[in-house]
Image (cartoon, rainbow, N blue to C red; front, side, top):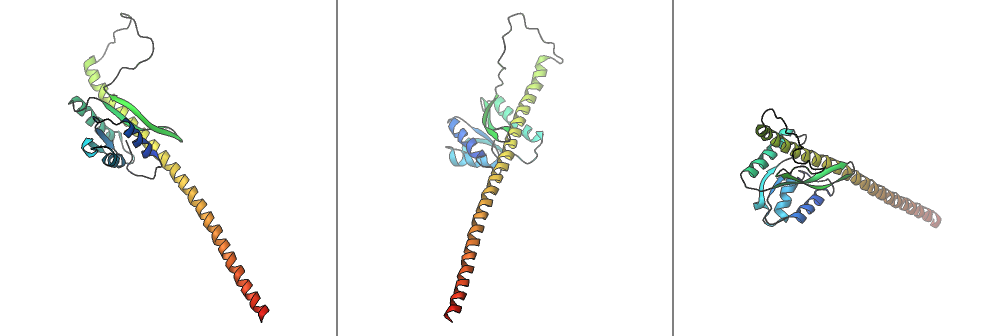
Length: 206
């Protein structure tokens, strides 16, 4: 998950460096953002041929936009075109903290942690409707939610990185303006001093 535009500092560079580090010959890619697609084409061996699809990340995108992406991934996984799905995107952790994060998506793995229940102690859940139908609806909903959350994190990281990049660019421009203003004033002062000296020397000689 990259961005559609630049001017966001090292956000994309760090993400793509992590993608290259994790790349394997058997990997295929679904890209989000123009920068991600162009990076694949330039830097990965057979980059264009290893890209299954490309999605955009428009401003203010609704959940329906990310739903198209998650449905594509689910269908490709169900057809056996891919055997696993992982999302590599920037995770937003705060206004000054973000970075590449790899999140396994498919196959869904059970959560770990806590003490395992002994046989016969776990209660049998009562489901309405039946468990199979419930899972058939809940699992795609969970995947849609995880994909949408990853895209929201990536967008938040992009906005934060862009704000900091623009702030640093403004500070650098202010320093440059101050440097050139000092040089201009010094040059103007030297010119005025030179003219005064010429006038004074001309009067003395006359």
